[in-house]
Amino acid sequence: MESRLSGIERRETLRYLQYRGGTLGPEIAAALDRGEQKLLETARPRTVWRLFEREADGRLAGTDFTPEGRDVAALLTDCDQVILMAATLGTEAERLLRQAQARDMAEAVIIDAAGSAAIESVCDALCDELAARFKPRYLTERFSPGYGDMPLKQQRALCRVLSLERSIGVSLTESGLMIPQKSVTALIGVSDRPQPRRPRGCETCAARETCTYRKEGTDCGKG
Image 1 (tube, rainbow, N blue to C red):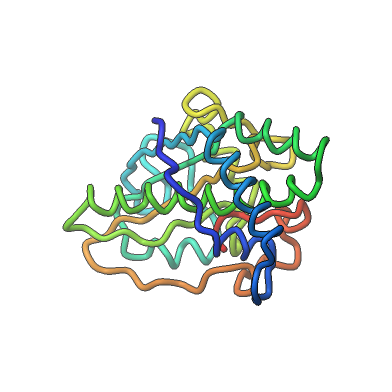
Image 2 (tube, rainbow, N blue to C red; image 1 turned 90 degrees about the horizontal axis):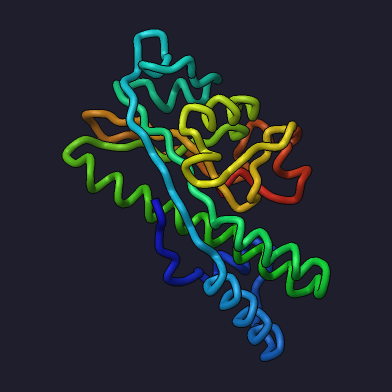
C-alpha cells in the first residue's frame, strides 16, 4: 500500500551525514533544505505487511521461512505471532539519487542521507500503525535480516513470502541487497506481554565487522 512521507527529520539526516554538531552555515542549511525537499517531492513510499502464526519450531505457519539466529530467537521468545513487513521510498527516489550522483555529488550525499532518514520514518510510522492495530497485544521492535546474527541471506526468503517485487516493486541483487536501495524488510513479534527493547545501532550489532550493508556504505535500517 502507499504510505505518506510528510517530512524528514533534519537531525536524522545530519546523523546519517555523520555530522558532529555545531552551527550549520547558511549555505549548508540551504543545501540540506533543497535536497530534503527534492526527496519529499519525488519519493513515493510503499509498505506491505502480513501476519503469521509462529510454530513451535520457529517456522512461520504456511511458509518455509524460519527466522535464524540467537538474537532473533531471543526477540521472539514470548511471541506466538510474527509480522513480516517491508517499506520502500520507491524507484522514483532511486532515480533522483542516481541523477544527483551523475550531476552533483555534494547534493547526492545529502539526498542519500535524507533517504536513509526518510525510510526509517516510513518504517516507524508503519510500526506505530501496527501497534495501534494489534492492541491490547504488544509488539517487539522490528528486526531485519543482516542485523545481529540473523543472516542476510534470509532477505531472499522474506522477500519471497511478501512477494515484494509484485507488491511494492522491490527486488534483490545477488548479494541480497534491495533495489531500490532505500528499502527495508523486517520482522516484528506479537506477544501478550510487553517486550524489552534491545540496544540498537551498528556499534551494538554483532555483525558490524562483516556487515554487507556497511561495506556498501549504508545500513540495515536499525540505526
